[in-house]
Image 1 (cartoon, rainbow, N blue to C red):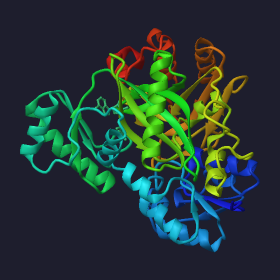
Image 2 (image 1 turned 90 degrees about the vertical axis):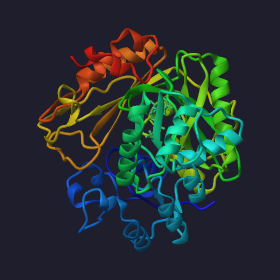
Image 3 (image 1 turned 60 degrees about the horizontal axis):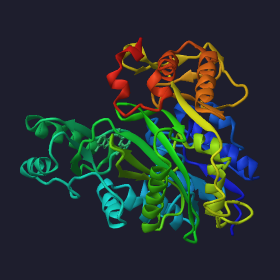
Image 4 (image 1 turned 90 degrees about the horizontal axis):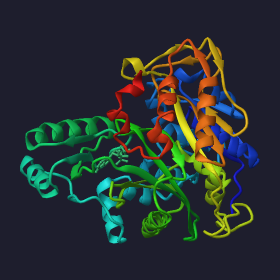
Length: 459
Ligand code: ADP
């Protein structure tokens, strides 16, 4: 066991604050890094110390400065680095260099990140572990002829996907052969720009599936538990907007099967720390593995609310070397993980639904949040006087509700989002309320195309 004294968070905004809070409660001193553009951001002030990074770099590049971050960590006698989500969180080189520098990377081993960061590789892992995967071809496309051949093999509609993809980028749905080659090249170009790797593969496009994912936690000794599932089907352009747990339409039997399959995959790669195994469930109730995210996810909050397990603290303790069943992590067995009630997360963003969700920027003149019983708010720059810059993700605050019933959790979410008053920048609050009020949402019937099929949600 190596108790951490100082942890650096290689991230910004709400997730940096989330990790600082976990460290604080564990008695660990916190170190923030910030870019020129983040000089006045709130997260800086939530750490015990903060340092400018990437002085001569752009706003995003600053947070990607692997060597500078590691050398700062060494200078400041940091024991471990938490990467949050996005930025360097899935970068195996960063995880490897941390290790080489004698700094603990709070996450799985870099070899696991490497393997699971590639959607083709991870599909192979899943198949070999006897977990169903979406019919497709498990190798990168080399020529236009191969693209045509693979697509015909899958049968239209197909989805053309970047092996290194993330955040809904590098993906194109193709309904007919004449669209295949242009989609292939545009996905390839997008992937090259966003990820620097342009391997593309093809799989069957499932119509109207649900996105169900499983939170897993593994220690460094091969012990693994799951913390059940989250339903993340409310998406716009393949990006999650509202997530909840437990899923209310899958059977108990199906839940067990999916969660066990998640464990099988995590065990097959020797996973340790927190991770998420993602599945799509088709309208017949069949589930298929799509990818594994080897990091904390935005929507980890809802799982924490129903299980009472602090996932970020667990990540830190596991990285310190504590086993799951230690007094510190305190997850004695799978059976000891209990789900209590329902939790829903709404991502309030500074985007304008009336203008195709274009990010809005500027100074927040008024910020009043809606807390109260059963509400948890995790935010980055939600305060009067904050300046929302155009450089980063537009997430303003995550409004999470918890209640004993799904209906009541929805009512709490609506109440809290309505209470949130923001002026100076536009938000997607009205849109979120329209989704929460929709009958299909109440029934848990929403699939990943729900938003695209319901233009009235934008009114
Ligand atoms: P990313 O890593 O970019 O988030 P994922 O592979 O996790 O990409 O997929 C994101 C979303 O894209 C899924 O939740 C789903 O809505 C859609 N999607 C991905 N693959 C398929 C597929 N084969 N059929 C239907 N939808 C898909």
